Amino acid sequence: MRSARERIIETTCELLELQGYHATGLNQIIKESGSPKGSLYHYFPGGKEELVADALSRDGQIILNRIRDSLALVEDPAEAVRQFVLNIAQHVQASGYRSGGPITAVAMETAATNERLRAECKHIYEAWQGAFVEKLVSGGISEDRASRLASLILAALEGGIILSRTNRSPQPLEDIAGELGLMISSAR
Image 1 (cartoon, rainbow, N blue to C red):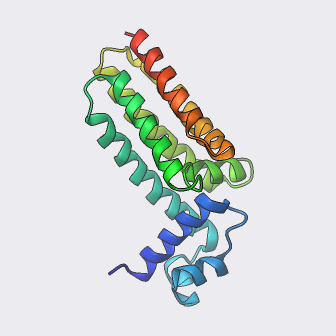
Image 2 (tube, rainbow, N blue to C red):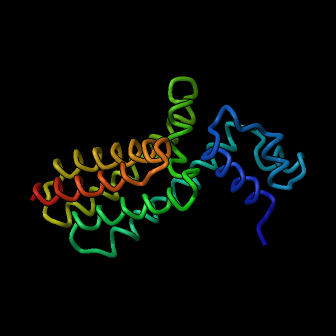
């Protein structure tokens, strides 16, 4: 059974992904998590900022694990990245174009106004980029080139998720998967 703290964080993650930082209020989190108001302030005395930072950290780690696990399934880095992006496309489509990009929503809304959340998003993106760098380097790409390609992979993924959600189509992510695969293949 999940603790009240876990329910609050999970609910926060879901709401942030669905509606963003500013539209997600503490009263909504309390109501949808089924937790008493006192629990929220007990576990997160720093309020919404602390709660969101913890929620981002949780989602960031879950996604980092998914990236690493997915990339480990395929030896060739070009094919591994291609398959990972195609899996994201399927996930976004299966959610009815409601999910995908949980960190992006908060990063876009808070990067210029909230140092703590900006730093948390930066930390998460760096960890994700590092996972892609490791895979690319293991496939024979120089570390410098792998770092630049990993940055491109992240930017393409985040933008592709936004386009897929906006267009209500997996096609942008499917196109990105193919192009990234070709680019990575030619980088060796």
